[in-house]
Image (tube, rainbow, N blue to C red; front, top):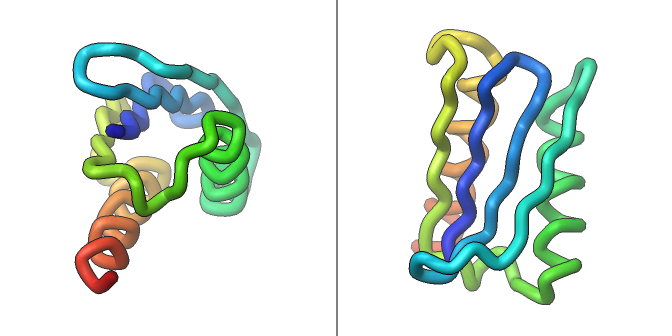
Length: 90
């Protein structure tokens, strides 16, 4: 399974769970502040809804259409990197 995190604006995120070329599920959410909290909670609920363990993901791809130096883009990339590091340590 692969998780795609995409954002076209600074306050709206789309999560897409994909297996190969087949889209399993998609969810959109928006936030006013505290993206890190909202992101983690939403991803957790999203994966539970699909009965997927976080560590079953073989890739997390961040496709952000927003400014790469924005805090939103940095939070998204940091999350993807952190999950990748934890997976390698298991």
